[in-house]
Length: 333
Image (cartoon, rainbow, N blue to C red; front, side, top):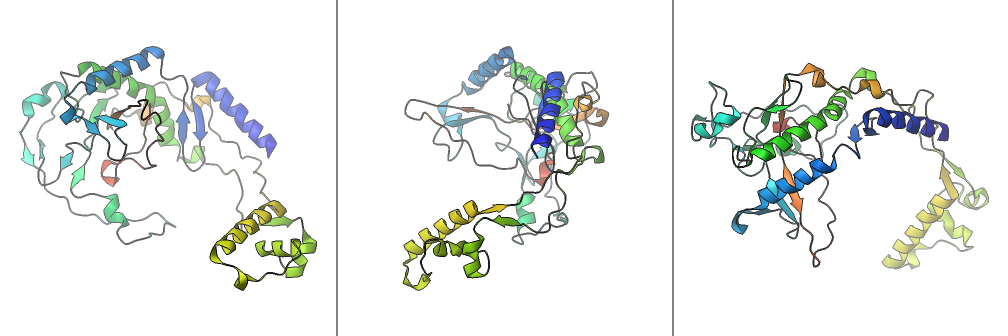
């Protein structure tokens, strides 16, 4: 086990030396991080952009619900999204970034779409019959921005929702650079499900087994159970004489005793358990199967801490968007 871990770390160190990117998860999910992708100059520009976006009347500021006035939304796709049966769209021509203000109030109202049949992945068991309704909205949808990739560097072609194209032109330029920084990692993440990257760290485990370190005690129960702890204490087990609180405490102690005296036999990794990903897979061009255009949804927020509110525990874990948005990769800075 240790040999495989060292081999894996050495492979990741080699990737980092050449790309400055580190695969954190690469088995069933794919996550890539970097401690150097943001330069000091870029971070300073982010601070300037945040200050510029925050410069608005208090009545127009978007403090996130449940954040105790610590998280201020700067650009959020849930504000003024596409609303079916209300929003207008222009379907007969392309509206570029420099022409988007001229087209305000143009177009036709987009109708509500029909609900498609959603097929759950194989082996997925739905907890309720409404899972597909929560996963797909027939009322709202986040609006993406078109990003051109043909010139070697990303170019934002269309309106970024809730970001004025003239007033915040410098922020557009910053977002363009952040997209450029994200492309090598996005490319790997979107290719991670391919056969060339698939591998198993362990073989199939049909049964969890353990090694009993107190066979003389468990023999009194004729089997290994957490409740065998009572024999280790030299007392008979009588659940009827215990109150609820005492019983719960006894159950907790039983589980602790079990963990200490019955060690799980962990499986050994397979011989070829090392991830096949290496530095040669990271591209500097031709991202996403040489795509000429991608769509990006932009979200920006700032965390405000004060002496009275000096800590922030983070938000709840969630997946961005719904099925409407078809999000396949996310970049967090």
